[in-house]
Image (cartoon, rainbow, N blue to C red):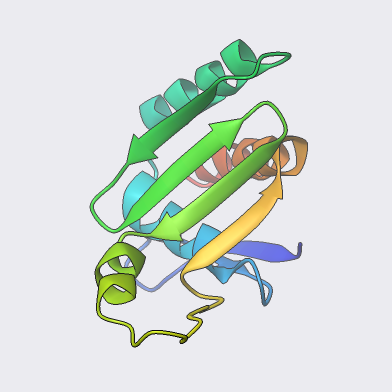
Length: 121
C-alpha cells in the first residue's frame, strides 16, 4: 500500500493512497480530518482487540471503519444504500468504496499521518 500526505492550498492535510486502498485516504480526509483525539480512540481500540476474537466499529458520516485483531476494513456508507437497489445477480465492487488491509499496516499509516500533522502544524 503506497500513500502520500500533503497540504493543499488551504493548508488542509490530504492523504492519497494507491489503487485498491484509495478509500483509506478518503476516510482520513473526510472522517479524521486531522482529529488526533479520534486517532487516539482508534489506536486504543486496536490495542484492546489484540489477541481477541472481538471487533470494533466506528461509524462516520461518509465511511465506516471496522477493526478486529488482524484486519481493517474501511467502507463507504453509500455501499449499503446502493447494494439494496442492485439487480439480482449483479456484483458491485468499487475500489474507491471499500478497502481491506492488515491491522499493523493500518496502525503504521495512522502513526505516519499523526507525525505529518504534528510536524507541519
